[in-house]
Figure 1 (cartoon, rainbow, N blue to C red):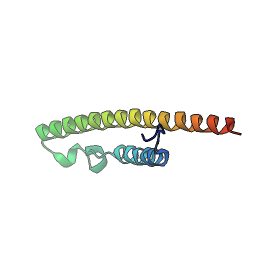
Figure 2 (cartoon, one colour):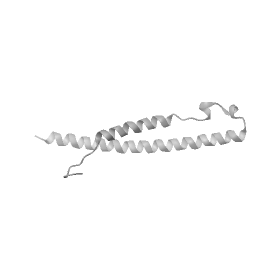
Figure 3 (cartoon, helix red, strand yellow):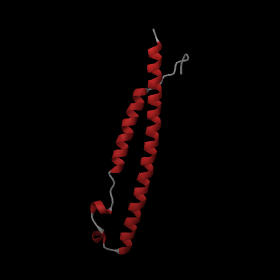
Figure 4 (tube, rainbow, N blue to C red):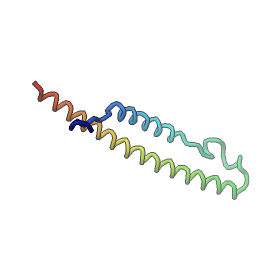
Length: 95
C-alpha cells in the first residue's frame, strides 16, 4: 500500500484460481488397485490388505487436499469479487 492506495493483483488472483482448478483436476485423477488391476494380480492376502489400506489413506489424503483447494479457491474468488464490485461501484460514481 503506497500513498493510501490499495493495490490488489486481481489478474494474479484469477491466475491462482485457474491454477487451483488445475490442481483439483489432477488430484481427482487418482490411482489405486482398482485402476491398475485387481486383487488377483496381487495374490497375497496380507499384501492385498496393505494395498487396500494404502488406497484408502491415499483417497482420504486426496479428499483433504481437495477440501483445502476448494476453501482457498472460495476465499480467493471472494477477494476478486469484492474488489471488482468495489472498483465498479467507485467507477460508477466518478464524473
